[in-house]
Length: 284
Image (tube, rainbow, N blue to C red; front, side, top):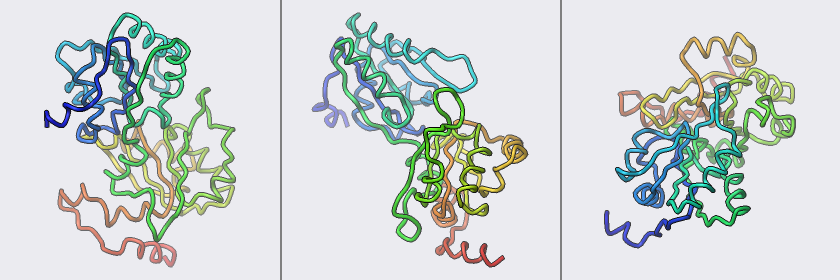
């Protein structure tokens, strides 16, 4: 394994690497990500980074928390970006560690632009985004030949913390057979109502995957109609479901009956024809 790292890039002093830590499981890190952790003098990490991933860093590496969580006191994004500049100018080898992928709702683009503005050299290390890897751990594929040839990824709140008006919800509802949403749990009732008003079936399958790809992962299957009310959100909280969560809407959710490989490890019996459940549900 050490030989495999021998030819990987060197994280040089005064440089910043924007690194995707994946959805949670340390095994989903790329070799470039582990290489960055091993070399960094300073690791500036997000709230969603697994502690086991941080433990892969060099023993003398300085850790700086820069987590942003909705509804909780958080550092301003501009301050985080400028901190990276400050550390780089101090001659540090900086690993900016972000959950998932830096460029998928991770504000990696904003941070990279700040580095460009201040002439700080940087590298982008992509990671597995939770909207793909997290769903795979839940046994839900984002695409499947018998259900969809397209998928839409979107965020459930804008910079102001409300449902994004910039999203054409009608077009998304009509044009995307599968919708994967980040940071959508707070406004899930309002989003579900918008999608149904635009023509989505109230009985369309919906799944929430909380703490994806970690030991604390929870998966709850339901329908659009069942989350379209404030009472529905209360019930989700009563079940112990809370952010961080990925929400997926579409027929691919039914595939979990066949593809829940983690459940199978614990004795769950999988079905070989999960989409047959669709016909049974429609005729019920």
